[in-house]
Structure formats: structure tokens, C-alpha cells
Length: 189
Image 1 (cartoon, rainbow, N blue to C red):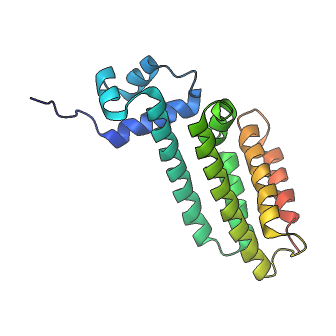
Image 2 (image 1 turned 90 degrees about the horizontal axis):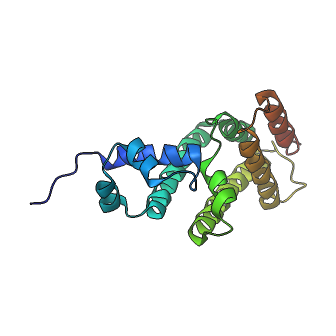
Image 3 (image 1 turned 135 degrees about the vertical axis):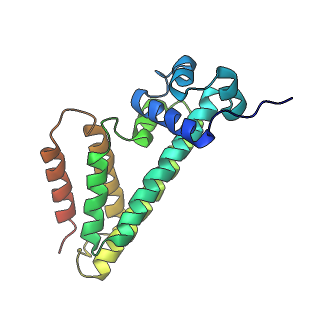
């Protein structure tokens, strides 16, 4: 007779996501995962497959959570500048582990086609969101039209990725906020 699962799949996936986020893929062992997730090794394999498959599921979970947080707040923003400020503040204030997407791209994308593809998709979607916000600001005469919205989105995304990496260090939040403020000012009329 088959045993029923003694854990909630979403909850243990959340635990795996946090562990990968804190330690990275390479440093996280199967033993670490079993202990941190609080499930048996066999249950981990039966439910999630191997470490790489579990990592990709955790990566997707992270991306979905971040997107939901950002999308909701952008929709509530009254101005394009307010939306950009929220996004950059989110990037700076996120937990000390930085961004799982950026961390994974740096650690794995050069040698892991799945992570490279997922990172590229995530980066493209972020740039599209930034472009939409910049177009909104241009249409409302909040931002200059001297620059192409798509090119400015690429530039801002690069700044945000840098901020996410810098946020993992002991660099002050004040400095990171100054970088954000200057980046938004470059868009203003």
C-alpha cells in the first residue's frame, strides 16, 4: 500500500528555495536539503526528482513570488517614477541573500543551459516591465522622450542587477539609494 505524503509540497519547496537562495546551488548538498526541508531523502526524490530539478522548481517559485510582489505594487503606483522607485527599493531591501535569479545566473548560467534560459527569460520579462513603465512616464510627460524606452529599460535593468549584487555586500543602503535616485533622474524631463 502506498504511503501518503506527510508534508505539504508547497511548504517544503519554499524551504528548498530559501536554502538555494542563501547558499547557492553548488554549496547546497542533498543532505542540506533533506535536513532543511524536513523530509526523507526518498520523499525528496519521489516528489521533486533530483537536485537540479528541485532547484529549477525552487527558481520558478522565487520568480513567481517576486513577479507577483512587483506587479501588484506597480499597478498601485500613481506615477511611473513611483513604480520605478518601488522596484529599485525592492531590489535593494530584499533579504541579504540578494536575488536568486541574479545569483543563479552568475553561478550557473555559463555552464547550465536550463539556468541560462530561465535567467534570460526572467531578464527579458523584467526589461519589458521596465519598458512599459518608461513608456507610461513618457506618455504622461513625466519622463523624457529623448531616449528609446526599450534602450532605457535595458540600461535600468543593468543598474538593478548591479544593485542586487551590491546589496549582498556591506555597501550602505544610502549609497544604493543614491544610485537609484540618479538612475530615475536620468529619465525625468
